[in-house]
Figure (cartoon, rainbow, N blue to C red):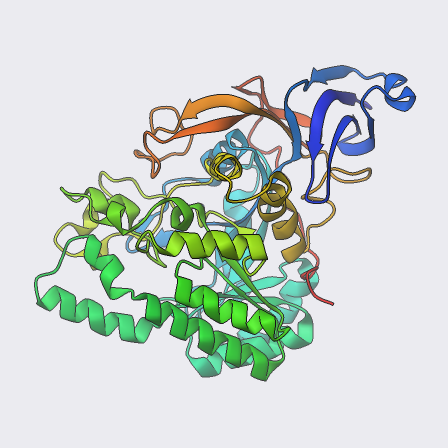
Length: 467
């Protein structure tokens, strides 16, 4: 059955332009876009017409950094692929790229298959995978080539978490050399984990056990040092590099310096670093545990540098690093020892709204909002133009967004499977009204109309920001 949907009267915003246009959707794809009121648009008929007068019509968000059901510190991230992708849809995100995990001593394939199984038939929106490499050896290096051919075109390495995910400089260099040959993109968690572990041990020995010390031991200089080292290793390997969750001004300066030299180095930050700070980590009565994530929240003065980096394109992407743990029973594992607090924040539902608020606050333009949340992550991870824009032939992942609606972010009203909100009580202007995923309404007039299993696995091309 062929179905046609017509979105009339909205302001269509992409990374490239803004036009008052009507959008015709057929069989899950954008069939045509034409100026509102034009003779072409007036001639269109459809089975379903959506009135977007006074609203924005924007591409569905692409969140390129989520962790659904991630095992961490003896527990699991509290969002499943079903609950997490439903929450993403409520927030105007229509594609996630999650991380499949290689366990030490296991093949990449075993980790990837486990994540395929977790997500299969569960997702409300489309999804892809990156691969976490936690055991770089001859066998896993060979497997990287096979995964790239299969559409898993990015690999995450950790300079942090010794004994869990950590890779040393030699392993990192080998993986980068392999990616330089096979077209994959290395994603780096850049913190000097060996040095941080020393500082953790010393802090605990001094009786410094509260959540705020998590931020104090994971020093900005150790993020900057690791970022610098990752860039130099990538230069030696002749490989592109993508640094995840950049939180510190000093680390951003390393990226900016590399980009000024014309190097293929890219950076991502997250809403928590733009809107939250060490003030949250210092909240009394163990409340600060809600804000424990790595890289950690920084003092407020880092925020201005991150916003500037987004404006100057030294940072290309805002993802969430969505990795929720409930305060009760999960974050509480670290009472008396901050190093045992599971690392991660909920945010997949809040990203598009917080960034729209940033438009209103004058940090970024409307088109830059769409660029950093939709188009650039799609290009970075080989999904463009299928995802990340509104143009004939692209997937009909479309959000009707009310830029005037006001809301208060709260755990009482969010859809993430977690018992607190990192942005509790924050007033924002702008709200998702209707979400189409491949032309199907997932959210319609603020009602969830989607279903688990609608979302499809999307194989990805290699990074489109290169060459």
